Image 1 (cartoon, one colour):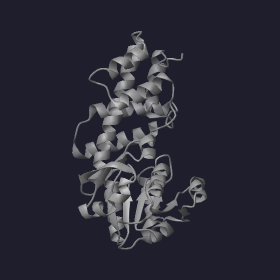
Image 2: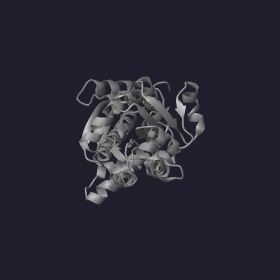
Image 3: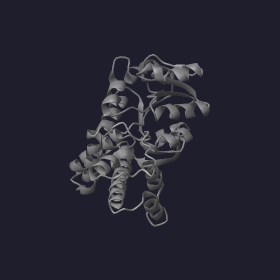
Image 4: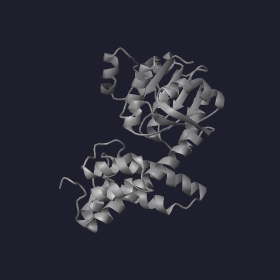
Length: 298
């Protein structure tokens, strides 16, 4: 089992994932582009690298979770980036949600520099990241997955083997496509019901006691009811993922009318200045446009 692990990207998802690696007993080194996010780790005695290169030189496995494909390319290829520190003993685990072509390009770059690559984005939000119960969506050679599975299992339960490199990314786009369209449907249904003088508590009770009951509808419905849009998974990220799914669908000539409509709902929320709010805030422009409130406190 690899004992030394590097973690690049200490945002809302990355920081709790890195803490879980530390709690699991791995020899952890961290790096973040904004140094204030490194401070809690340094204060706890975790090693902090001054560049992705220096982090990579110290560890067997590098886990990477950053905002988008551009950020992945930058942290790999920049001066003193991950690629500059690779050798044949290093495995790079790319856990960000990016496009399939971006994943394949990152894999090729890592292999050209002598390292091994695993495509393993995660499904879940900040709560599961803290609890170590993210769903790992692993795409890569079976022996590579076998080698790093103890690392993945410190952050993910379960780890789903999706196929070769790129298939983890495709699985992430699949599940976030479903997430975004379901959230859009809930937002529209609640707005419709409120405009029919239905109470939000009653609508949620009906949903939660029938065939449509789901953790998503329960959690997001309660956020809407209490006007709680502190970000678990922001509107901006859901819009990005729907956009990536539609790009992939276009390349494959797969018609996705519902997904396109959901993207436009999230686009409207971004235009209303809600991009950094939780994805449940997609309901807010609909409520405002129709002159209703969905908060039970109003």
